[in-house]
Length: 253
Length: 293
Picture 1 (cartoon, rainbow over the protein chains, first blue to last red):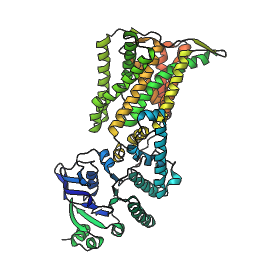
Picture 2: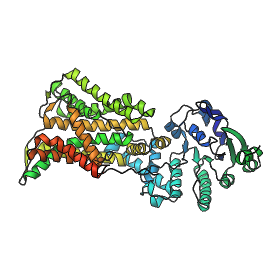
Picture 3: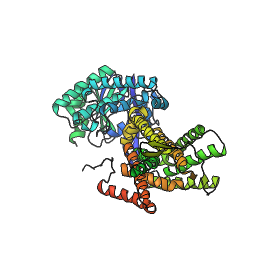
Picture 4: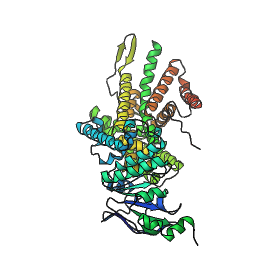
Protein backbone atom coordinates (compact mmCIF):
# COMPACT_ATOMS: atom_id res chain seq x y z
CA UNK A 1 0.00 0.00 0.00
CA UNK A 2 1.22 3.49 -0.78
CA UNK A 3 2.17 5.64 2.19
CA UNK A 4 1.98 8.86 0.23
CA UNK A 5 0.05 9.28 -2.97
CA UNK A 6 -0.94 12.21 -5.18
CA UNK A 7 -3.59 12.23 -7.88
CA UNK A 8 -3.97 14.82 -10.64
CA UNK A 9 -2.00 17.21 -8.45
CA UNK A 10 -1.46 20.67 -9.89
CA UNK A 11 -0.80 24.26 -8.94
CA UNK A 12 -0.97 27.45 -10.95
CA UNK A 13 0.61 30.77 -9.97
CA UNK A 14 -1.58 33.21 -11.86
CA UNK A 15 -1.38 32.01 -15.44
CA UNK A 16 1.71 29.89 -14.89
CA UNK A 17 0.97 26.22 -14.34
CA UNK A 18 3.95 25.14 -12.29
CA UNK A 19 2.72 21.56 -11.86
CA UNK A 20 0.09 19.68 -13.80
CA UNK A 21 -1.53 16.29 -13.38
CA UNK A 22 1.19 14.88 -11.16
CA UNK A 23 0.65 11.35 -9.92
CA UNK A 24 3.26 9.87 -7.68
CA UNK A 25 3.07 7.13 -5.14
CA UNK A 26 5.56 6.13 -2.49
CA UNK A 27 5.45 2.70 -0.91
CA UNK A 28 6.34 1.70 2.61
CA UNK A 29 10.08 1.84 3.30
CA UNK A 30 10.77 2.84 -0.25
CA UNK A 31 13.50 5.25 -1.33
CA UNK A 32 12.12 7.27 -4.20
CA UNK A 33 13.87 9.89 -6.33
CA UNK A 34 12.35 12.97 -7.93
CA UNK A 35 14.57 14.35 -10.66
CA UNK A 36 14.28 16.83 -13.48
CA UNK A 37 16.03 19.84 -15.01
CA UNK A 38 16.18 23.15 -13.13
CA UNK A 39 12.79 24.81 -12.88
CA UNK A 40 10.89 21.59 -13.55
CA UNK A 41 8.87 22.04 -10.33
CA UNK A 42 10.61 19.68 -7.90
CA UNK A 43 10.78 22.01 -4.91
CA UNK A 44 7.26 23.23 -5.69
CA UNK A 45 6.22 19.60 -5.36
CA UNK A 46 7.77 19.47 -1.88
CA UNK A 47 6.01 22.68 -0.95
CA UNK A 48 2.70 21.15 -1.99
CA UNK A 49 3.34 17.97 -0.03
CA UNK A 50 3.97 20.01 3.13
CA UNK A 51 1.10 22.44 2.46
CA UNK A 52 3.38 25.45 2.23
CA UNK A 53 1.44 25.97 -1.02
CA UNK A 54 -2.16 24.89 -1.46
CA UNK A 55 -2.73 22.92 -4.66
CA UNK A 56 -5.21 24.35 -7.17
CA UNK A 57 -6.25 20.86 -8.20
CA UNK A 58 -5.86 17.22 -7.26
CA UNK A 59 -5.36 15.33 -4.05
CA UNK A 60 -2.59 14.30 -1.67
CA UNK A 61 -3.19 11.32 0.57
CA UNK A 62 -1.06 10.20 3.49
CA UNK A 63 -1.92 6.61 4.41
CA UNK A 64 -5.22 6.95 2.61
CA UNK A 65 -6.26 10.20 4.29
CA UNK A 66 -6.37 13.52 2.46
CA UNK A 67 -4.01 16.16 3.82
CA UNK A 68 -4.87 18.99 1.44
CA UNK A 69 -5.85 22.20 3.23
CA UNK A 70 -4.27 21.31 6.55
CA UNK A 71 -1.84 23.69 8.17
CA UNK A 72 1.85 23.12 7.61
CA UNK A 73 2.59 22.29 11.23
CA UNK A 74 -0.25 19.74 11.24
CA UNK A 75 1.23 18.03 8.19
CA UNK A 76 4.48 17.65 10.09
CA UNK A 77 2.65 16.31 13.11
CA UNK A 78 0.86 13.84 10.83
CA UNK A 79 4.12 12.41 9.57
CA UNK A 80 5.68 14.30 6.69
CA UNK A 81 8.97 15.98 7.44
CA UNK A 82 11.53 17.67 5.23
CA UNK A 83 14.88 19.30 4.78
CA UNK A 84 15.61 22.34 2.66
CA UNK A 85 17.56 23.03 -0.49
CA UNK A 86 19.26 25.93 1.24
CA UNK A 87 20.03 24.93 4.80
CA UNK A 88 17.47 26.41 7.17
CA UNK A 89 18.68 25.38 10.60
CA UNK A 90 17.96 27.51 13.66
CA UNK A 91 21.44 29.02 13.46
CA UNK A 92 21.75 30.69 16.84
CA UNK A 93 20.39 27.69 18.70
CA UNK A 94 22.52 24.79 19.94
CA UNK A 95 22.76 21.59 17.90
CA UNK A 96 20.79 19.55 20.41
CA UNK A 97 18.10 22.21 20.80
CA UNK A 98 17.59 22.19 17.03
CA UNK A 99 16.62 18.55 17.38
CA UNK A 100 14.59 19.10 20.54
CA UNK A 101 12.58 21.87 18.89
CA UNK A 102 11.39 19.32 16.34
CA UNK A 103 10.23 17.06 19.18
CA UNK A 104 8.28 19.88 20.78
CA UNK A 105 4.83 18.86 19.65
CA UNK A 106 5.31 15.34 21.01
CA UNK A 107 5.77 16.68 24.54
CA UNK A 108 2.73 16.93 26.70
CA UNK A 109 3.56 18.97 29.80
CA UNK A 110 1.72 22.26 30.17
CA UNK A 111 3.18 25.75 30.26
CA UNK A 112 2.44 25.93 33.97
CA UNK A 113 4.40 22.79 34.80
CA UNK A 114 7.20 24.30 32.71
CA UNK A 115 7.15 27.43 34.84
CA UNK A 116 6.98 25.53 38.12
CA UNK A 117 9.34 22.78 36.92
CA UNK A 118 7.17 19.92 38.12
CA UNK A 119 8.35 16.28 38.03
CA UNK A 120 6.37 15.79 34.79
CA UNK A 121 8.37 18.61 33.21
CA UNK A 122 11.69 17.20 34.38
CA UNK A 123 10.85 13.67 33.27
CA UNK A 124 9.75 14.71 29.78
CA UNK A 125 12.65 17.08 29.22
CA UNK A 126 15.03 14.30 30.27
CA UNK A 127 13.41 11.82 27.89
CA UNK A 128 13.61 14.24 25.01
CA UNK A 129 17.22 15.05 25.82
CA UNK A 130 18.10 11.36 25.68
CA UNK A 131 16.20 10.79 22.44
CA UNK A 132 17.83 13.82 20.86
CA UNK A 133 21.29 12.59 21.83
CA UNK A 134 20.55 9.14 20.39
CA UNK A 135 19.53 10.74 17.15
CA UNK A 136 22.67 12.89 17.05
CA UNK A 137 24.77 9.75 17.59
CA UNK A 138 23.38 8.24 14.39
CA UNK A 139 24.92 11.20 12.56
CA UNK A 140 28.06 11.34 14.71
CA UNK A 141 27.06 14.77 15.94
CA UNK A 142 26.72 13.93 19.63
CA UNK A 143 30.11 15.39 20.51
CA UNK A 144 28.94 18.75 19.12
CA UNK A 145 25.57 18.78 20.88
CA UNK A 146 26.21 22.08 22.67
CA UNK A 147 27.78 23.96 19.76
CA UNK A 148 25.78 26.61 17.95
CA UNK A 149 24.34 25.16 14.75
CA UNK A 150 25.92 27.96 12.70
CA UNK A 151 29.42 26.88 13.80
CA UNK A 152 29.16 23.40 12.28
CA UNK A 153 30.93 22.77 8.98
CA UNK A 154 28.68 22.57 5.95
CA UNK A 155 28.46 18.79 5.66
CA UNK A 156 27.49 18.45 9.31
CA UNK A 157 24.85 21.17 8.98
CA UNK A 158 23.25 19.08 6.23
CA UNK A 159 23.34 16.05 8.53
CA UNK A 160 21.85 18.05 11.38
CA UNK A 161 18.98 19.10 9.13
CA UNK A 162 18.22 15.45 8.45
CA UNK A 163 18.46 14.63 12.15
CA UNK A 164 16.08 17.49 12.94
CA UNK A 165 13.61 16.27 10.32
CA UNK A 166 13.77 12.75 11.75
CA UNK A 167 13.07 14.08 15.22
CA UNK A 168 9.48 14.77 14.22
CA UNK A 169 8.97 10.98 13.86
CA UNK A 170 7.96 11.12 10.21
CA UNK A 171 6.45 8.37 8.11
CA UNK A 172 7.78 10.05 5.01
CA UNK A 173 10.98 12.05 4.89
CA UNK A 174 11.45 14.57 2.07
CA UNK A 175 15.06 15.46 1.30
CA UNK A 176 15.64 18.48 -0.94
CA UNK A 177 19.05 18.06 -2.60
CA UNK A 178 20.73 16.39 0.37
CA UNK A 179 24.04 15.96 -1.46
CA UNK A 180 24.29 19.53 -2.78
CA UNK A 181 27.75 20.94 -2.19
CA UNK A 182 29.20 17.70 -0.85
CA UNK A 183 32.45 16.15 -2.06
CA UNK A 184 32.45 12.56 -3.41
CA UNK A 185 33.45 11.03 -0.06
CA UNK A 186 30.73 12.90 1.80
CA UNK A 187 28.22 11.93 -0.87
CA UNK A 188 29.10 8.24 -0.51
CA UNK A 189 28.74 8.52 3.24
CA UNK A 190 25.39 10.21 2.82
CA UNK A 191 24.11 7.37 0.64
CA UNK A 192 24.95 4.91 3.38
CA UNK A 193 23.35 7.13 6.00
CA UNK A 194 20.11 7.41 4.03
CA UNK A 195 19.85 3.66 3.67
CA UNK A 196 20.62 3.26 7.34
CA UNK A 197 17.89 5.76 8.25
CA UNK A 198 15.33 3.90 6.15
CA UNK A 199 16.16 0.56 7.78
CA UNK A 200 16.49 1.87 11.30
CA UNK A 201 13.50 4.22 11.43
CA UNK A 202 11.40 2.19 8.97
CA UNK A 203 10.31 5.19 6.95
CA UNK A 204 9.83 6.07 3.29
CA UNK A 205 12.09 8.65 1.71
CA UNK A 206 11.46 10.93 -1.24
CA UNK A 207 14.48 12.87 -2.41
CA UNK A 208 15.29 15.53 -4.95
CA UNK A 209 18.84 15.36 -6.25
CA UNK A 210 20.87 16.47 -9.24
CA UNK A 211 23.77 14.09 -8.66
CA UNK A 212 22.74 11.26 -10.98
CA UNK A 213 25.11 8.62 -9.62
CA UNK A 214 23.63 9.35 -6.19
CA UNK A 215 20.03 9.01 -7.42
CA UNK A 216 20.70 5.96 -9.55
CA UNK A 217 22.69 4.33 -6.78
CA UNK A 218 20.15 4.69 -4.02
CA UNK A 219 16.62 5.09 -5.36
CA UNK A 220 14.41 2.10 -5.92
CA UNK A 221 11.96 4.08 -7.96
CA UNK A 222 12.42 7.36 -9.81
CA UNK A 223 10.00 9.99 -11.09
CA UNK A 224 11.14 12.49 -13.71
CA UNK A 225 9.57 15.96 -13.85
CA UNK A 226 9.91 18.30 -16.79
CA UNK A 227 7.98 21.55 -17.28
CA UNK A 228 5.66 20.62 -14.41
CA UNK A 229 4.69 17.18 -15.71
CA UNK A 230 5.84 13.67 -14.92
CA UNK A 231 7.46 12.47 -18.14
CA UNK A 232 8.76 9.14 -16.93
CA UNK A 233 8.91 6.80 -13.98
CA UNK A 234 10.55 3.52 -13.19
CA UNK A 235 13.71 1.89 -11.92
CA UNK A 236 17.14 3.46 -12.37
CA UNK A 237 17.78 1.23 -15.34
CA UNK A 238 14.52 2.19 -17.06
CA UNK A 239 15.07 5.89 -16.47
CA UNK A 240 18.63 5.80 -17.74
CA UNK A 241 17.50 4.40 -21.07
CA UNK A 242 14.32 6.42 -21.46
CA UNK A 243 14.60 8.61 -24.59
CA UNK A 244 12.22 11.27 -23.16
CA UNK A 245 14.44 11.70 -20.12
CA UNK A 246 17.56 11.94 -22.19
CA UNK A 247 15.89 14.56 -24.36
CA UNK A 248 14.77 16.57 -21.34
CA UNK A 249 18.28 16.68 -19.92
CA UNK A 250 20.34 16.97 -23.08
CA UNK A 251 17.84 18.56 -25.43
CA UNK A 252 16.39 16.70 -28.37
CA UNK A 253 14.42 17.47 -31.44
CA UNK B 1 26.63 57.49 50.44
CA UNK B 2 24.10 59.94 49.12
CA UNK B 3 24.92 58.96 45.57
CA UNK B 4 24.59 55.27 46.41
CA UNK B 5 21.12 55.90 47.82
CA UNK B 6 20.17 57.72 44.62
CA UNK B 7 21.48 54.83 42.55
CA UNK B 8 19.30 52.44 44.52
CA UNK B 9 16.29 54.70 44.03
CA UNK B 10 17.06 54.78 40.34
CA UNK B 11 17.24 51.01 40.20
CA UNK B 12 13.81 50.91 41.84
CA UNK B 13 12.25 53.07 39.12
CA UNK B 14 14.38 51.39 36.50
CA UNK B 15 12.89 48.03 37.50
CA UNK B 16 9.49 49.24 36.30
CA UNK B 17 10.98 50.35 32.98
CA UNK B 18 12.77 47.03 32.75
CA UNK B 19 9.61 44.95 33.22
CA UNK B 20 7.85 46.89 30.49
CA UNK B 21 10.92 46.79 28.25
CA UNK B 22 10.91 42.99 28.45
CA UNK B 23 7.55 42.95 26.68
CA UNK B 24 8.77 45.23 23.88
CA UNK B 25 11.84 43.10 23.46
CA UNK B 26 10.05 39.74 23.42
CA UNK B 27 7.48 40.82 20.88
CA UNK B 28 10.13 42.43 18.71
CA UNK B 29 12.25 39.31 18.97
CA UNK B 30 9.53 37.08 17.63
CA UNK B 31 7.73 39.18 14.99
CA UNK B 32 10.03 42.22 14.52
CA UNK B 33 7.14 44.48 15.50
CA UNK B 34 7.57 47.54 17.69
CA UNK B 35 4.34 47.10 19.60
CA UNK B 36 3.48 50.71 20.40
CA UNK B 37 0.33 49.57 22.19
CA UNK B 38 2.50 47.88 24.81
CA UNK B 39 2.76 51.03 26.93
CA UNK B 40 -1.01 51.20 27.11
CA UNK B 41 -1.16 47.66 28.45
CA UNK B 42 0.51 49.08 31.58
CA UNK B 43 -2.35 51.55 31.80
CA UNK B 44 -4.86 48.71 31.41
CA UNK B 45 -3.06 46.80 34.15
CA UNK B 46 -3.13 49.84 36.43
CA UNK B 47 -6.86 50.43 35.90
CA UNK B 48 -7.73 46.78 36.42
CA UNK B 49 -5.78 46.89 39.70
CA UNK B 50 -7.65 50.09 40.60
CA UNK B 51 -11.03 48.51 39.85
CA UNK B 52 -10.19 45.46 41.91
CA UNK B 53 -8.61 47.19 44.85
CA UNK B 54 -10.57 50.44 45.17
CA UNK B 55 -13.91 49.91 43.44
CA UNK B 56 -14.57 46.23 44.19
CA UNK B 57 -12.50 46.07 47.33
CA UNK B 58 -10.97 42.65 46.76
CA UNK B 59 -7.85 41.72 48.71
CA UNK B 60 -4.52 42.96 47.40
CA UNK B 61 -3.20 39.58 46.24
CA UNK B 62 -6.40 38.95 44.28
CA UNK B 63 -6.31 42.39 42.67
CA UNK B 64 -2.71 41.83 41.55
CA UNK B 65 -3.43 38.35 40.24
CA UNK B 66 -6.54 39.49 38.36
CA UNK B 67 -4.61 42.34 36.81
CA UNK B 68 -1.82 40.05 35.60
CA UNK B 69 -4.26 37.48 34.19
CA UNK B 70 -6.42 40.17 32.59
CA UNK B 71 -3.45 41.76 30.83
CA UNK B 72 -2.09 38.40 29.71
CA UNK B 73 -5.43 37.53 28.12
CA UNK B 74 -5.79 41.05 26.68
CA UNK B 75 -2.35 40.66 25.09
CA UNK B 76 -3.36 37.40 23.42
CA UNK B 77 -6.68 38.90 22.26
CA UNK B 78 -5.02 41.99 20.81
CA UNK B 79 -2.58 39.80 18.90
CA UNK B 80 -5.38 37.58 17.58
CA UNK B 81 -7.71 40.43 16.62
CA UNK B 82 -5.30 43.09 15.41
CA UNK B 83 -2.03 41.54 14.29
CA UNK B 84 -2.37 37.84 13.47
CA UNK B 85 -4.15 38.27 10.14
CA UNK B 86 -1.60 40.85 9.05
CA UNK B 87 1.26 38.54 10.02
CA UNK B 88 -0.34 35.59 8.24
CA UNK B 89 -0.71 37.56 5.02
CA UNK B 90 2.85 38.81 5.23
CA UNK B 91 1.80 42.46 5.47
CA UNK B 92 4.61 45.04 5.35
CA UNK B 93 6.07 46.14 8.70
CA UNK B 94 4.58 49.60 8.36
CA UNK B 95 1.01 48.22 8.37
CA UNK B 96 1.74 46.43 11.62
CA UNK B 97 3.25 49.54 13.13
CA UNK B 98 0.25 51.68 12.20
CA UNK B 99 -2.09 49.01 13.57
CA UNK B 100 -0.14 49.12 16.84
CA UNK B 101 -0.61 52.88 17.05
CA UNK B 102 -4.31 52.35 16.34
CA UNK B 103 -4.60 49.83 19.16
CA UNK B 104 -2.82 52.29 21.46
CA UNK B 105 -5.27 55.12 20.66
CA UNK B 106 -8.19 52.73 21.04
CA UNK B 107 -7.09 51.63 24.51
CA UNK B 108 -6.50 55.20 25.69
CA UNK B 109 -9.93 56.32 24.54
CA UNK B 110 -11.66 53.27 25.90
CA UNK B 111 -10.30 53.92 29.35
CA UNK B 112 -11.25 57.60 29.09
CA UNK B 113 -14.78 56.55 28.25
CA UNK B 114 -14.95 54.13 31.16
CA UNK B 115 -13.07 56.08 33.83
CA UNK B 116 -13.06 59.71 32.57
CA UNK B 117 -9.84 61.48 31.73
CA UNK B 118 -9.11 62.78 35.21
CA UNK B 119 -6.44 61.10 37.29
CA UNK B 120 -7.39 58.49 39.86
CA UNK B 121 -5.39 58.13 43.00
CA UNK B 122 -4.19 54.74 44.10
CA UNK B 123 -3.82 53.87 47.76
CA UNK B 124 -0.49 52.56 48.99
CA UNK B 125 -0.49 48.85 48.31
CA UNK B 126 2.47 47.35 50.07
CA UNK B 127 3.69 48.48 53.48
CA UNK B 128 6.54 50.90 52.96
CA UNK B 129 9.28 51.56 55.47
CA UNK B 130 12.84 52.74 55.51
CA UNK B 131 15.44 50.08 55.93
CA UNK B 132 18.93 50.79 57.19
CA UNK B 133 21.64 49.01 55.28
CA UNK B 134 24.73 50.14 57.14
CA UNK B 135 24.83 53.88 56.67
CA UNK B 136 22.44 53.58 53.74
CA UNK B 137 18.70 54.25 53.93
CA UNK B 138 16.53 52.45 51.40
CA UNK B 139 12.77 52.27 51.16
CA UNK B 140 11.35 48.78 51.20
CA UNK B 141 9.39 49.59 48.02
CA UNK B 142 12.62 50.16 46.15
CA UNK B 143 13.86 46.76 47.21
CA UNK B 144 10.51 45.23 46.29
CA UNK B 145 10.76 46.69 42.78
CA UNK B 146 14.32 45.53 42.26
CA UNK B 147 13.63 42.07 43.68
CA UNK B 148 10.50 41.58 41.57
CA UNK B 149 12.22 42.60 38.36
CA UNK B 150 15.16 40.27 38.97
CA UNK B 151 12.89 37.32 39.81
CA UNK B 152 10.84 38.01 36.67
CA UNK B 153 13.92 38.18 34.48
CA UNK B 154 15.27 34.89 35.80
CA UNK B 155 11.88 33.21 35.37
CA UNK B 156 11.67 34.51 31.82
CA UNK B 157 15.18 33.32 30.98
CA UNK B 158 14.30 29.85 32.26
CA UNK B 159 11.05 29.87 30.30
CA UNK B 160 12.78 30.84 27.07
CA UNK B 161 15.82 28.59 27.43
CA UNK B 162 14.56 25.52 29.24
CA UNK B 163 10.98 24.78 28.25
CA UNK B 164 9.29 23.58 25.10
CA UNK B 165 7.31 26.78 24.61
CA UNK B 166 10.61 28.67 24.94
CA UNK B 167 12.14 26.48 22.26
CA UNK B 168 9.12 27.12 20.07
CA UNK B 169 9.58 30.86 20.62
CA UNK B 170 13.25 30.77 19.66
CA UNK B 171 12.52 28.63 16.62
CA UNK B 172 9.72 30.95 15.48
CA UNK B 173 11.88 34.02 15.94
CA UNK B 174 14.75 32.53 13.90
CA UNK B 175 12.81 31.08 11.00
CA UNK B 176 9.03 30.89 11.22
CA UNK B 177 8.76 28.92 7.98
CA UNK B 178 11.17 26.22 9.11
CA UNK B 179 9.53 26.13 12.56
CA UNK B 180 6.15 25.32 10.98
CA UNK B 181 7.75 22.50 9.05
CA UNK B 182 9.08 21.12 12.33
CA UNK B 183 5.54 20.83 13.66
CA UNK B 184 5.37 24.08 15.60
CA UNK B 185 2.19 26.14 15.55
CA UNK B 186 3.81 29.52 15.06
CA UNK B 187 0.56 31.47 15.40
CA UNK B 188 -0.14 30.16 18.89
CA UNK B 189 3.51 30.66 19.82
CA UNK B 190 3.30 34.32 18.79
CA UNK B 191 0.04 34.80 20.70
CA UNK B 192 1.63 33.24 23.78
CA UNK B 193 4.56 35.65 23.52
CA UNK B 194 2.19 38.63 23.46
CA UNK B 195 0.43 37.18 26.49
CA UNK B 196 3.61 36.80 28.52
CA UNK B 197 4.84 40.27 27.54
CA UNK B 198 1.51 41.81 28.58
CA UNK B 199 1.44 39.92 31.87
CA UNK B 200 4.90 41.33 32.65
CA UNK B 201 3.60 44.81 31.83
CA UNK B 202 0.85 44.22 34.41
CA UNK B 203 3.48 43.39 37.01
CA UNK B 204 5.18 46.66 36.05
CA UNK B 205 1.82 48.42 36.38
CA UNK B 206 1.31 47.16 39.93
CA UNK B 207 4.78 48.35 40.93
CA UNK B 208 4.11 51.68 39.21
CA UNK B 209 0.85 52.19 41.12
CA UNK B 210 2.58 51.32 44.36
CA UNK B 211 5.36 53.82 43.66
CA UNK B 212 3.50 56.80 42.13
CA UNK B 213 -0.05 56.45 43.52
CA UNK B 214 -1.66 58.09 40.50
CA UNK B 215 -3.04 56.74 37.25
CA UNK B 216 -4.45 58.38 34.10
CA UNK B 217 -5.55 57.03 30.71
CA UNK B 218 -2.39 58.53 29.18
CA UNK B 219 0.14 57.18 31.66
CA UNK B 220 1.21 54.50 29.16
CA UNK B 221 2.54 57.07 26.71
CA UNK B 222 5.67 58.36 28.39
CA UNK B 223 6.23 55.21 30.42
CA UNK B 224 5.95 53.10 27.28
CA UNK B 225 8.29 55.39 25.39
CA UNK B 226 10.93 55.19 28.11
CA UNK B 227 10.62 51.44 28.34
CA UNK B 228 11.03 51.32 24.59
CA UNK B 229 14.18 53.40 24.91
CA UNK B 230 15.38 50.96 27.57
CA UNK B 231 14.77 48.01 25.23
CA UNK B 232 16.62 49.68 22.35
CA UNK B 233 19.44 50.77 24.64
CA UNK B 234 19.98 47.21 25.85
CA UNK B 235 19.65 45.73 22.38
CA UNK B 236 16.10 44.97 21.34
CA UNK B 237 15.32 41.26 21.35
CA UNK B 238 17.65 40.55 24.28
CA UNK B 239 16.15 39.82 27.70
CA UNK B 240 19.17 40.80 29.84
CA UNK B 241 19.60 43.80 27.54
CA UNK B 242 16.08 45.04 28.28
CA UNK B 243 16.72 44.73 32.01
CA UNK B 244 20.06 46.52 31.86
CA UNK B 245 18.56 49.26 29.69
CA UNK B 246 15.77 49.80 32.23
CA UNK B 247 18.21 50.04 35.12
CA UNK B 248 20.50 52.47 33.28
CA UNK B 249 17.55 54.71 32.48
CA UNK B 250 16.25 54.68 36.03
CA UNK B 251 19.65 55.47 37.54
CA UNK B 252 20.32 58.24 35.01
CA UNK B 253 16.98 59.85 35.87
CA UNK B 254 17.44 59.63 39.58
CA UNK B 255 21.00 61.00 39.48
CA UNK B 256 19.96 63.90 37.24
CA UNK B 257 17.13 64.78 39.59
CA UNK B 258 19.40 64.57 42.62
CA UNK B 259 21.86 66.91 40.93
CA UNK B 260 19.07 69.46 40.67
CA UNK B 261 18.24 68.89 37.04
CA UNK B 262 14.74 67.53 37.37
CA UNK B 263 13.59 69.56 34.36
CA UNK B 264 16.09 67.98 32.03
CA UNK B 265 15.78 64.32 33.08
CA UNK B 266 13.97 63.37 29.90
CA UNK B 267 16.57 65.16 27.80
CA UNK B 268 19.28 63.20 29.57
CA UNK B 269 17.45 59.90 29.11
CA UNK B 270 16.99 60.35 25.38
CA UNK B 271 20.49 61.82 25.08
CA UNK B 272 21.91 58.60 26.51
CA UNK B 273 19.98 56.65 23.91
CA UNK B 274 21.43 58.72 21.09
CA UNK B 275 24.96 58.39 22.45
CA UNK B 276 24.77 54.63 22.89
CA UNK B 277 23.30 54.11 19.45
CA UNK B 278 26.08 56.21 17.90
CA UNK B 279 28.67 53.87 19.37
CA UNK B 280 26.74 50.58 19.33
CA UNK B 281 23.91 50.81 16.80
CA UNK B 282 22.47 47.45 17.81
CA UNK B 283 22.32 48.40 21.50
CA UNK B 284 24.45 47.11 24.37
CA UNK B 285 23.58 43.40 24.06
CA UNK B 286 22.24 43.47 20.54
CA UNK B 287 23.55 41.35 17.75
CA UNK B 288 24.91 43.09 14.71
CA UNK B 289 23.13 41.54 11.79
CA UNK B 290 25.46 41.70 8.87
CA UNK B 291 23.98 40.88 5.52
CA UNK B 292 26.05 38.43 3.55
CA UNK B 293 26.66 39.63 0.04
